[in-house]
Length: 148
Picture: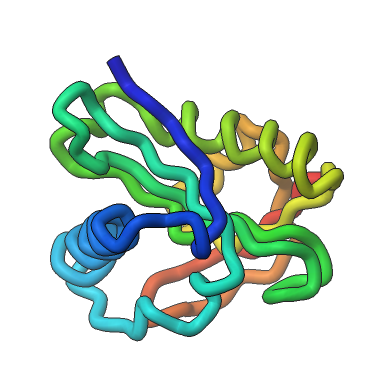
């Protein structure tokens, strides 16, 4: 059984933060062969959605930034799932939980994100539409998307 939890950075344990950063690095840096500065200072004032499996292993995470921190709108980023558990489609679970949290806690239905372009259709399933802005970020094609 999967467990999801959303906590502000200040409420994370050291182990929780370590495990979510380790997963992000495993996927974004190692698996995608994309060296980049993951710890950008924005985690300190972010909410972090964490998905744990039955063995209490962090298998997915999402970073949620309040409006005005990165975009004028609330931002979703650092959406990542462990390679061994992608068959469970936890990306959809994480997006649903993040959107629910943003509506209930941050009182917003406007969310912006920077999607890896090959995942555009995934985000469209959750109500996001392309703003038309496409760019390279760390050598990977990205598309800016908005849910309004």
